[in-house]
Length: 417
Image: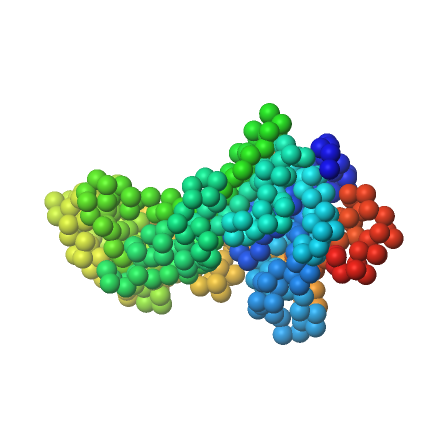
């Protein structure tokens, strides 16, 4: 193949998002990779999701609507693959790999989350791809990173969210007591690395546009989780102490955590003495702000249980709504919400964080989480639902110059779907 300039068809650049015109070939599956590429798609990138002939494994994960007669994908896939186009390729065939190579030669970015070495065995390593596309930004997210940037002894270990949460230090400081490490509810061991990969890709794209030279972008899930848990590093380095699960308290700040309400829990975070003074007044205990045992953060940390008892004497006999009326807008405060309460809160409606999308096979739309990054001039958007498997194969192949009869032949040969 010969290097060539990108031939992005105008029809693929209709988005007015900040990343309009950016072409991304997405070879990822599960959560970390698709979450990263979806962020790019939300902000206007043309993301081509290349799937196996059987599709991304999360298509069958569900949950599914009760009336879904199609079951091409459920909630998991819908939530992290919106705004993308899908093509199915058999990469076990030479023709399938040739088509992928042509797609990548026409792209700005390729992202994959295979185990290290898979793309090399397919003859599609970064070093090979950059020969015909020197501006290519090649992004990877793996459990323990790519050997190019540090050969981990665990490089060949498969990893999911719970593995990176465990080995990155997050579970070691989370739990009801020092002896009970606990998994964080959402898949942050995937989504945080995805966010960091997205930042890395955009940094590399910026440089590629200035210099014409792409580069390899590598994020290890465990590294990303450790970076998010940065406090445990300096605590151990500065003091020699090994942090342990802290329950709903904070080792350095007080009050800073969860407090019982009559109908659940609320969070209160007074990181400054000024906020503590306002909280003491709001709960009818202004004298606490003047008491030397509680007047400073250091003193409150030393007498943490007494502080918690004083606050819960106020919160435990009131509902979350009543506490919000007393504390909202005065100190950093928030009720612990269920998803039902999130659906009912006007904040998420006005911020467009609960978005209706079509669910193929179902008579009614479904809701997915919206776009949290708000840009004033080029806002991101949920423009379309997640794609059916191979839904855009014809237009994608047509975009790289394949004629209709050639596409039909490839489908008959089961090279594409």
